Length: 136
Ligand code: NI
Image 1 (cartoon, rainbow, N blue to C red):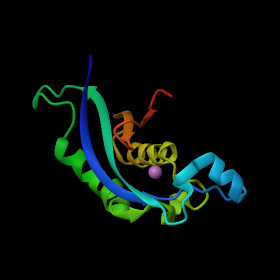
Image 2: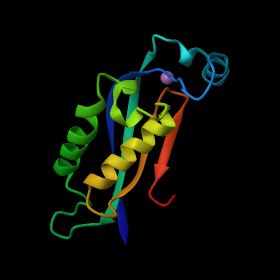
Image 3: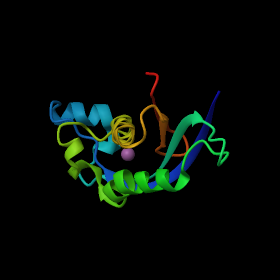
């Protein structure tokens, strides 16, 4: 039987929603004030859920220290207090929180033990959240 462990991290970052393929007018229509040329910031709460068998020796489903290290190295050091638009991952993708959530999921899935990552959930504001699941 599988058990699950969730952990929450804070990433403060700025972005501007602007699609090169759209005209200025279409960008304003699609993104509203989020298309403002100066960008704006968010305190993103990033939730990571991992699953697996409970280790009979430790009673735990995951090595918390290793998970924190992976998230720190792959996510926090890369994105915290940055402008997401300047990251190479968003060179040809608009840094919407849908795409940010997908990017975090892909980076963590590649760095964690196979099959461990269940989902990544990103809260952009108190009213908006986005999720990417391993099971599609
Ligand atoms: Ni925003």
